[in-house]
Image (cartoon, rainbow, N blue to C red; front, side, top):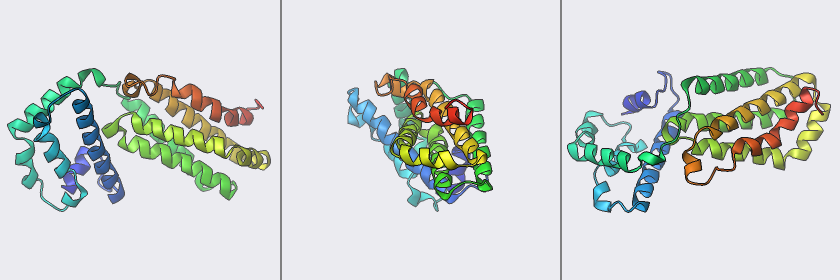
Length: 235
């Protein structure tokens, strides 16, 4: 099962065990989310008793040592296929736009570049930890995006914006005395955060539920862009 799930989640051959666990937990969360949406639409519980339950059981980390063949027959059974097809049809108007592959690759590449620059940079321990925290938050959300969609990205950006807001005083002090290299890293971090927020605004699943209609890019940009502006000579 570990090999099967690694293929499903498109983890490379040297995937970290932690990534596999994170993806499985994200999948189980999404299964519960889908069932909740179906229940809210009045779908009877008896129509959800096969496929969702079996998929949830198969996605348990406890099943990783087991063989795929011990689960396959249960999941491909006709009653499961019918249940999943019915669920997909019922929730068809709750689809969100899918992030283009090139945007996903670009964001991951920028995170990798930022992390690489951080490794050998002349930067204070505080700023190093702060930037690393933002990288980790966005990367973790991108890891589960194919499974859970935009919601983890929205949550990560709220977390990032909160960090900038709470740490504002210390950040301004640190930036004032930071060398140019450190200021450049802060500017790049702000740029990656803003770009991620703009991508989120193009994914409308959360907006359809009324939770993201305000546009997260505008709110997050107001918090992080001053750090980029200072590096570019704007303040």
